[in-house]
Structure formats: structure tokens, C-alpha cells
Image (cartoon, rainbow, N blue to C red; front, side, top):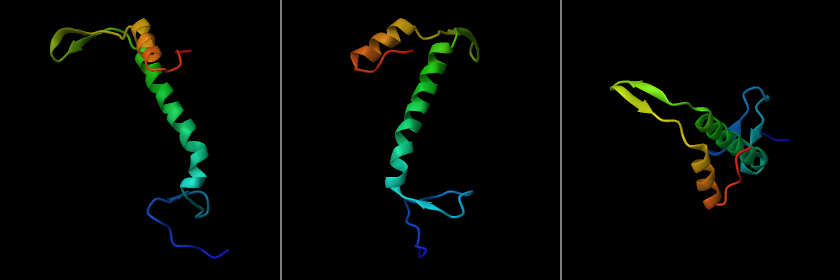
Length: 82
């Protein structure tokens, strides 16, 4: 196999011995990676608690209402939280 010149959108795996992957190779991992990031964000939003602020002092950052979040997600066709 003759080496080819990498394109701008290719990704080289540093530990892969110079193996070049193009968009077609990455499709199978892109979707699960997006799902994992989305779930991590939702987990952080749901796990957050109401906390006082330091700057400016005396205010509260209220935790998200999980029921309201689920209603918004259902409105836009997103699956419910697990």
C-alpha cells in the first residue's frame, strides 16, 4: 500500500502508527461520541444543586427543575431521562 498525502479533514492517530482515517471511517464513532457528550451535559444539569453565589454575594443559582426539563424534552421529541 502506497502512502498518501493527508487531507485537511483527515485525523492521524498518534499511537496508531500513522494510520489515516477519513470521514467514512469516523462515522461509526461520531454518533456515539455526540450521545455521550449530550448525556454528560444532561447528567450535570440534573445533578446540580441550588448554591449561593460569591460574586455578587447573596444570590442563589437555582438547580434546574427536572420535571420542567423533561417536559421541554418531550415537547421537542427527545427521549426521557433515565
